Image (cartoon, rainbow, N blue to C red; front, top):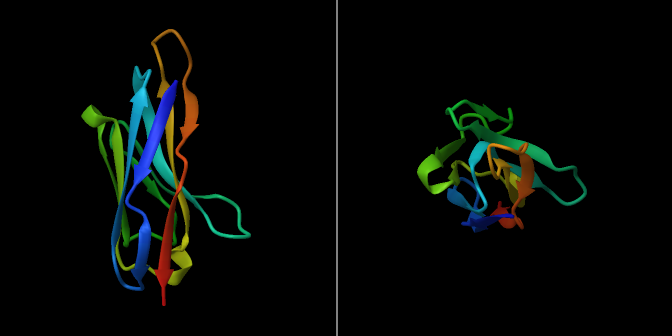
Length: 121
């Protein structure tokens, strides 16, 4: 079993910054993709940013130039640095990881419990 524990959410004024962290633990052989999704009230969950173990990154158009994803593969941890925050960034942010527990099994998707980010205008 794999657990993802997020931290770093909170309330910030527009234009401010927050840094989210997500640490994976448990039965981990390798992690391919780690990333962040978000879900605002009444909206579908959407990809914010993702990073492969090799460092290839992908961002939603709405956050390009403002958010930066990074990984510490040795610590099985992913970070999301969020700058120039806007009220429309308000959402619950979920950490995601595609994890193989051993070389003999396929990878499975795991999710964190979510952390609230609220940006006031």
